[in-house]
Image 1 (cartoon, rainbow, N blue to C red):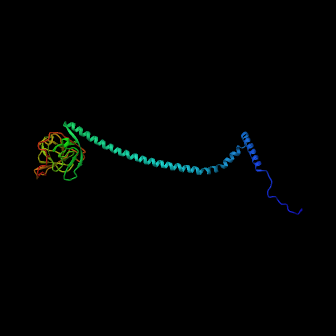
Image 2 (cartoon, rainbow, N blue to C red):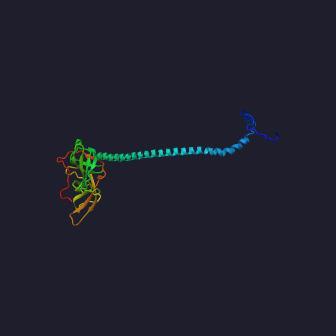
Image 3 (tube, rainbow, N blue to C red):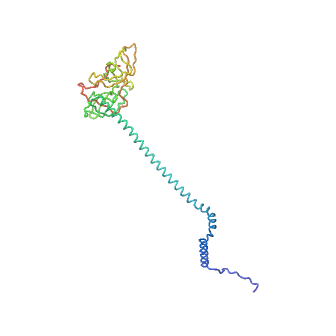
Length: 294
């Protein structure tokens, strides 16, 4: 029937997929051959690369950002670890430096002691301090030498600068010594300038640790005079420095002047002492201040 409507087929017949694929491959090969020989596609390729560059950049941003974060994190961790290591090494070096400074100071003290012993020309024993009596009314120390080292009561102690004191009690491996600034200690001295003799007793102090007894107000003694051991009594050999006259106070109402002496030995800073080897006195015992001494 001519009035009948024509029905359009659902499936149109066309070329197969295989034919299309072969056709596309041939076209691609032809285009690549022409581009390789005549460079006809160079301008097109340049334009396309310019158009897709922003897309390439956007695609690469996450990767670049991830690498930057990873590098920054690892770098920060490495810096923190290095900082911790350097801090630890710095502490070790500072601790070693402190030990080195202490050893240098000890070597200086020992060298001074040895030089002093050579100047004295006597046999001595070097002893280290073990303890210091904290009693404010006593000035005593404990040294690491005893009877096994042939120490005896009354044996003189020196440092590099002068007389420190004498041995008070002797034990097998340690001994107690009384220092010259102890209030119960006395030592015969003389002024090296004119030979004036006196008795120096301890005051318990450090800067003015000694006082001279019974010095007449008209005696020839001056501030700055050096006092040395006189050798009287046989306890201390003569000639050892004891102290320097620091202050003289004269009261016209009193018969005697007040003479205060700064000890030559560094009584508050000694770490090692020299024990003088000498003949043991017949009556072993430390010299004490006279009864009623001011």
